[in-house]
Image (cartoon, one colour):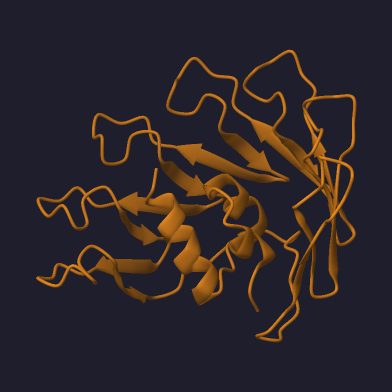
Length: 209
């Protein structure tokens, strides 16, 4: 099944939030799931996604700028946002359903302001002398993520492994495939339950960082 957040093309944080853990919201299984948009007098929702299949979207119409215009509900999952004196978390997602999200308030720029935990699942980041991995996600729960430190620009700095899953990229004379994902072999294992499609989108977005 396609994940709603893949369709929305959210950033890697949102992908981690909704692809990796149990509060995932799924769209219908039909390939031709209809997407509808708001035609509204309210600018907070006008032109935004109203529904994907039978899953409805609602947005905040609020006096608080930290949440105004942001997603309030996807289906029955409520989104809440921090209204905080700390810029590292202010305006960011506080919870989705019953899953709380926390952010680092840290002296280390590699992790400051980034997601610290989702529910009881901790997230760590590399503080490294190697620019290929510095500041990137190091682990999600007990699943470690490694990155290529390579002489080949097609793979350098990109994800090399996620748990037991090994990732390879094309080194090709054809620009249509050069540097793109070639294969994902093995299983992540443990806490993560990515489908192959979800893993593919997670890798694509993580490699943008």
